[in-house]
Image (cartoon, rainbow over the protein chains, first blue to last red):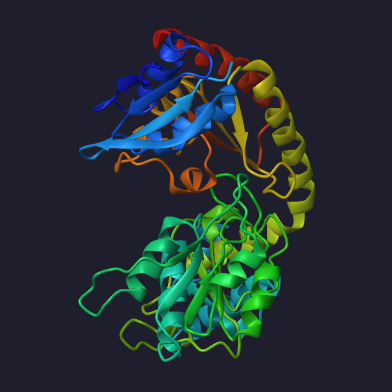
Length: 77
Length: 361
């Protein structure tokens, strides 16, 4: 089992981190994890909202990288 | 109406000469008209220089009079920023550092739970703040349920009624209420502050006799007269206008998700303001969306962070946990037509799909 796919979205403004997530979610297998590192405050709301709207699972916050929080997403379909 | 108001109401109502007495009478009439439409006594109503000033004086003055009970202010997480800033200012220390109010969260529709709100209020609470309806997503709040709990604990309730006055019946349960004339089609520069008899209130500003000691300075009488006239007219057509707006908003709420993929329409579908509709489009930049719609002739607002000077998303959308980017808030004007809505419903899908294509989606 390898670790999650990490998307470093630091410095990106909304909606770019979510666009990146949408483009790359297909790179992990179903049940695979993506970890989005994003310092835009909108990501805290928009990553879980994207999961809900697109039918994926928001798996909670990941480890922060410096000041930048990260968000875990599980591909479910 | 404005010109007649300037002709008739130029004098200072605090003076004793003829034109001043005439001005006083006009001011008293305006106060009676507005009080009756708010469900208030005329003596409870004062005019301010804006809705924001009414909020400031309402929150600060009520909290000040309750200082002995405590400093803590409880507010819904989706109050207008003017309320949250006033609450933080009031609860802060004497050196001027603000202190965050105790915020009560909302559900996905933007509504507070009355029991949860009540649980946040205790005997040390100086003041509870709850809007009549949300200014960004239109959800109506359970003010009367909340105020009942607060009354039992002896805690006054500040109601920011800016969104509903002139559109919907004003909830009964306010101790202190603020409203803004331009929201009901009146002029800018007129706000209303109402303090229910029996509610303790002490001005946070230097002493001044005007407006029963609640608002300093020579008020904008022509504006006040125009505001009263506008509210009278608006209240007379409110039901009819609300029914027309509601039908158009229902259409937008149904058609946008049918025509645009990956869209979230936000706010309570039923318990809502009649004229407001808000939705968020995945992968779309809110600023670009507002700009494109503006070019197409639609003046809309957005709660997306890219449209805010702070680069933070709307605290309302955050508190609801709904998508903050690609956000559009549509407020229907009084004379909007069904054809305007048709055109809006045609333009939005084109604009969104173009912006998504540019983003590589």
